[in-house]
Image (tube, rainbow, N blue to C red):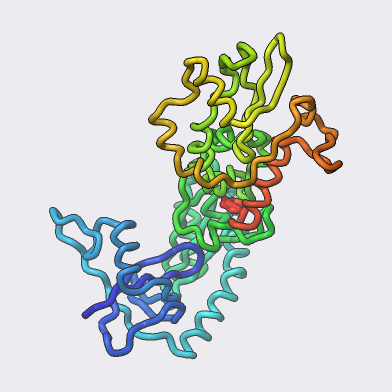
Length: 365
């Protein structure tokens, strides 16, 4: 029985093939020589069997695995053979020559006075094609450049325009978290990231703080977004006025990590109370802090709080929101809860993701 194989090449390029030798199955990480359009190429196996079949079926719609039943599926090409030592040496020599090819392409781009940035070049393993990746803000007419490069390299030339996030994924780098970009290390697909993700997490909207190496928003902003949205459903919205045991109070801020709500009233001033106490006070007076539907959706988050609830004296009120630390129980210092929350989120991202562009990397995230 044929086995579906995922093969990755330089950068983020990948393709799917079939392996017919069931007696000697391929393993992840093995180099193989495959048949591609107009020639042969060398790559490494990154997924086999059912895993590769599911990835192939979810990423394409025109092959034998993921094709639509209403159309004639295009069969996957077979893997030609395992790569030999000589094949690997040839592959390494080609990779070393790609930087020289990129410098020559940059010189030709300057001669033709084209506004484009050459990011990377990639030789096909049999040197039958040279792919040139570039970024540009506007459309570029490179027909004359292609003819010039074809006569220079004596091979087929393909110019492919990519975005800055794809460029970061190909070139790789280290994100602000200290790890390799998510997009170039493990993140298979680059999903869209918008500014609303940072707003929902109450992060700084300073572009230098939430952007990755690619200049776009961090890919890791999306990792914890679902938790923040779900957790905030349990709290009243900031700016809302609620009726409590001391009268009408305005919700100034919420602390989803410590399960606290910051309230302020014109008569009584400011105070900090646990979410559970606020809910009891509101319901005792006949009000509703959150609907039954929202409460059921947030059950999972309520069952497992991230940190132990730490209550502060009401006498401190909102004094701890300032820059200076305030005294806590047993003489310990207590910092601004929102500032601490931001530090906790940064530590969490730095340890669990490839920060940057997503860091990221994030991505270039």
